[in-house]
Image 1 (cartoon, helix red, strand yellow):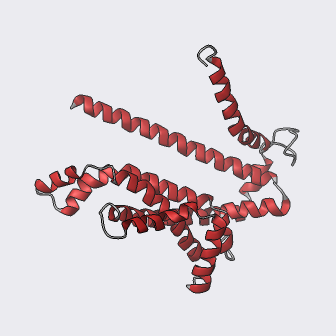
Image 2 (spheres, rainbow, N blue to C red):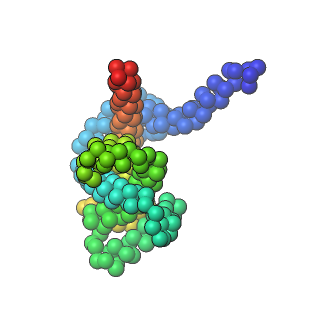
Image 3 (cartoon, rainbow, N blue to C red):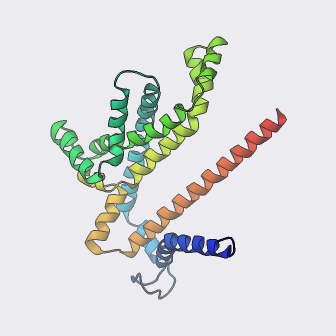
Length: 268
């Protein structure tokens, strides 16, 4: 590797080609004038026009966004509180930690069947938004707890003690000291919960009711019934584009915050 430094560049290029070549071809095929995904016959925007006229897509997208936002908010609040609770030593903490980590390793098919039996059959929650929300909170909660707890466990307790010594009440100390320190982890946990809810197919397919089809389930159903249609390809391209834009915005914002923090440190 030291004698041939270009080898590493070639390997990296092949890895990126393996990862992003299918996505790039998907984007190119979405502008194809024919319905074929293997042969480009011309440039056209007709599939995007047909996608814009499909009210089912927008209804599914609206439901998916509402479900993901509600699931992210509930999971973040409960998961953050659970992470702070697990920070303290108490009898049975190891057992609670294992139980909160189980959804990370349990197969989604098993989770879907279990949640269908519990929420719908046992608890009486009807299929639809309510059952989907309960299920999404249940499997997103573990990710929030893991992310926030990793940050909480690395916090210096002396900073909170110093705030208390200076006369700050527990609420003021939490708002001015603890919360700013854990805010990046809380935001990361909320992002995990939102993306997990937005992308879920397996568990949502068990709990989807009439008029409550999420966008991933709708795309999967369309692809399984009629094959991969150009409208689904166009929709997938738009989803990838929106994800890339959000990622770029996040990177730019993080870089701006780092530069701002560096400037403040230099001034101090």
